[in-house]
Length: 154
Image 1 (tube, rainbow, N blue to C red):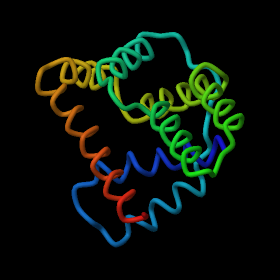
Image 2: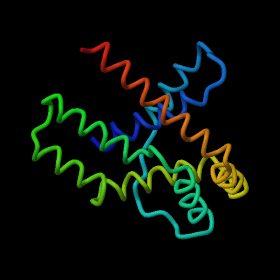
Image 3: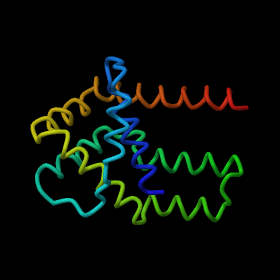
Image 4: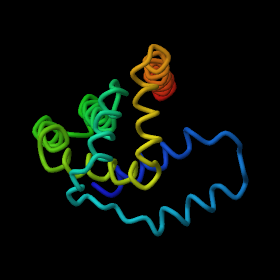
């Protein structure tokens, strides 16, 4: 389950930031996912990780862990999970090893994609009023998309 959820979030984050549709992009994504290995081991405690943590806090709002808990709650409300299973999964992703593993994997992805300077610039942006509006816009878009999907499925 850990690999499937992380793969899902990796794919979504890559697709959300694509500006152009390229027919070969799906082949590239498929190849990358086939070779992608999630590294959930402890991250180094260096300046880059400290800044990544600050960036994730500055972005706030709907992070990966919250998205997973939201999905668990949704599955429980649809009857796809028992209350005990939902509670155990929620605990795993909010205070258990799942949270640590997911946080480590996300920070390792950030380390691969961005330099310290770029992370610092992103942090400054998300601390600005424009960055906060942007983060709010993303969350609102996700909520509206979810609401439309719920209406369509019912």
